Length: 152
Image 1 (cartoon, rainbow, N blue to C red):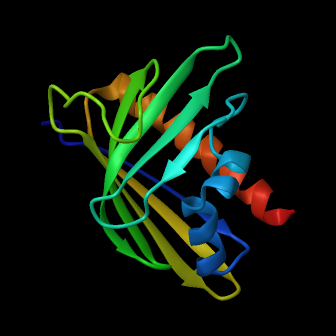
Image 2: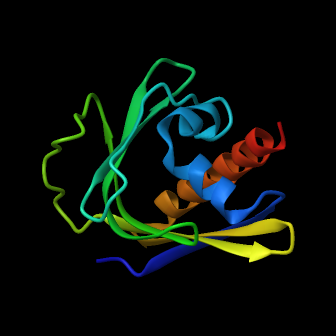
């Protein structure tokens, strides 16, 4: 298992409950999720410990990459911990083949800061530096989208 870690943070002008809801409700996720030029046409969330999620990242060339995983910890509106698996092609919410290695893990903290929320994303178990760089660009794009969504 890799020990590569990525931490990104952003202060968002919204209460933790509002930011948490935007992160966990499918209708809201579809509106902001994804890096620049990537759409999220499918977002499914079973928000409970042991529940699964899946998000579609549709790229400008039409290709779709799926992010799937299982919720490991949920403390509303302060914390989410979930596994992270990335694959191409169609994946159903109920099943994806077991990964060859332990899935990556994402921890999202929603920390109150006056009338805003510090969102801290810690992405662990990253396979290599190339994947880490890709994740960093993706997370920064997602957080930019979240800021814009919650500003509206």
